[in-house]
Length: 626
Image 1 (cartoon, helix red, strand yellow):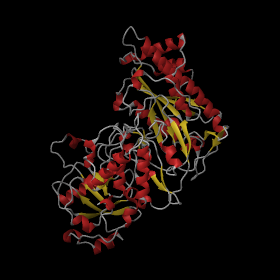
Image 2: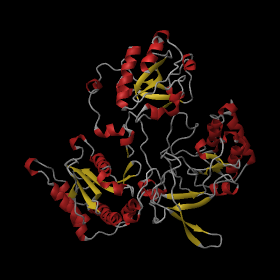
Image 3: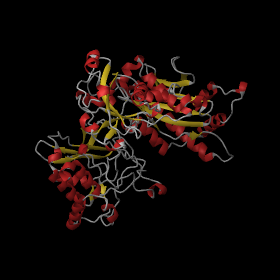
Image 4: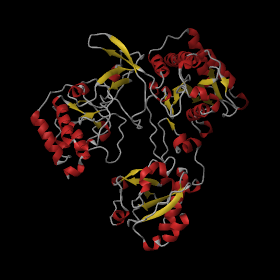
């Protein structure tokens, strides 16, 4: 089929044909319509290329670097090559007749290419008349230091983060793929991590023996190795045993040196993996990353398949180098999620007055000791009561650990409502919860504009903390600094009906109702709007919804919005509503600001305002307002 296409279209380059009629998809290759966008080559031209169906990002970058050089005689830096896909289906004719804006973000979105073009572009490849990808790159600089490094293999941690099935979700991502690697807090997958954090926040009092054992470890970690006087791993393990009261043993030979762990259960699963280097940064690697890889490697082995198919494989990691140590938590759901439970702390003695540091470090190790004891019980006892995973079916391993919530009936009796998870509703994991307790969802539910709320409160079996430091109380109101920040929301499930875009008047009425009560919604995007089969619009995801300052003057902000939004805001002012006193809602610090995703004035830790809701509504019906 490749030969036939080339024969029939051999003159496509010379004639600069505008339409490619055939897309070739074989077992090993896929055909793409692509264009190179560069300031030195402003004339839009669409080319055709046949690339491997499945390959690494680095290989794809090399292929296109060669193609760009052959087509445009323009050498580019391989690692700067980025792939983009048009936001809307863009016919080749239209693209080639258009004077393209050099800012690719105006008309295209980045392609998260972690495995293959077919998986990233999906159904677009079925249309041979559109532009599939736009390629951008920086021109190669002369005498660049990267010239000597271009053929060097990527470090293992970076290479794995470039491959979708190998990625560890620890917040670190490759600059080559920009893959989103943030994940929900691991406390929702297993209560052992919340137990650890609670014990760190409210620790048991250490005994004199505990303090002395920790001081001995801190003093030993401060010693510098010098030739024959190198520190002994066995000495460190012995000192850790004195504190943790658990035997540490070496892992299998399949792992790198210095991997020791505490085992539990008949299957010998690691509840703690230790990765300590002589000095932090030694060997040009991050010991915490090495511990992450060890955890993933072990839990991927066939020998622990029975355990892996029953639970999320909760594991603690202790990593560091020299007198620096940190505690990490990890789980294995449908992906490996790793999160730092403590900072990398100074486990050394640097003055004659170190009692505060000694006490704090001892408390952290005692918290680890207690949670390791409970985690051992989980693997040796509780695991037997969990049914094994059935392929292609729901299983507790992939979902948060709560399976019930307290319910108060109208007659005042309380009972426990149990539930099971069936599937995830969204693959996107970047969700931030505004912990301001408000009634916006309640009154909208009464008006039939939101699903019925069954429960909003702390995770079950999660102790609450009454105190919060004065410094935290006076911090920026958009930050969530309470120690008990994990809340659970249980609401009615709504089966969405047809496309909700035709129900603009209902959406406008919802925004007016919110204003009457002094609320702004915050995340008024299409994925949070449903229409049930009775024709009613429902809002979901009230994470950011909260009060806004109704008395504040924002004339400057209103100059940046369209006439439609200004008119609606004027109508809001005429209608009036409840005056608010706060606390007010702010966008989370983790807000992702992709190009053109949010209206003017939206930003990390900025106030959530009604004009943002109206601007997002206008964006949903943009063609109608033009």
